Image (tube, rainbow, N blue to C red):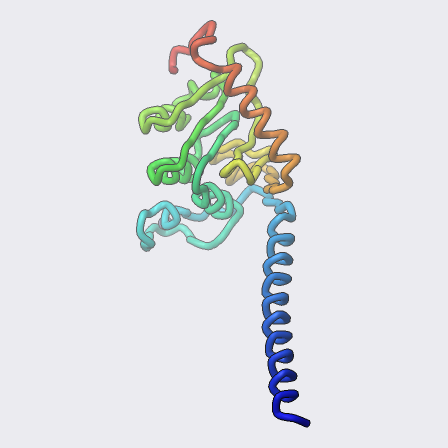
Length: 214
Ligand SMILES: [Zn+2]
């Protein structure tokens, strides 16, 4: 076998190896992407845990007596905190300090936040809607005596969190509730359109009445 022939064989083998390694890399990334597109389901009630360490600017410890392990609540909080561009919240009751706190942390980081909620339930003392508004987040609410009863949120326009869960301690820690996390583009698009439709419908310039608390 001539030396030039060996060099060629070596070269072809090397290129083949690189291509195979690169192919495996992209195959792995593709499979990871496919796995990430699968809907995920969370069931509540969640065990009573503390998610405060997630909300700290720098990783810190919390010395409170509650457990600090992963739960359906911490997964929800992590998802909200993962937002890079936008969080659109369309939820009937928003009183959970853990979930509203997660939104506030993202907002303070520069994420655009819009909130649609129910005009009757935002008037309850426990509602965190006032805290949102004080922070500078725009909140819009329904305009009639029927409930704005949705319970969904959109992260970066690409992840949908939806289900039966109100953002309240009662729902999170006591009730039987479900949440599904969906990345399917068609479903996300439908919920995005619903959010934009309601956001436009509840434009304050169109308000015919305003609850006393707002
Ligand atoms: Zn704690």
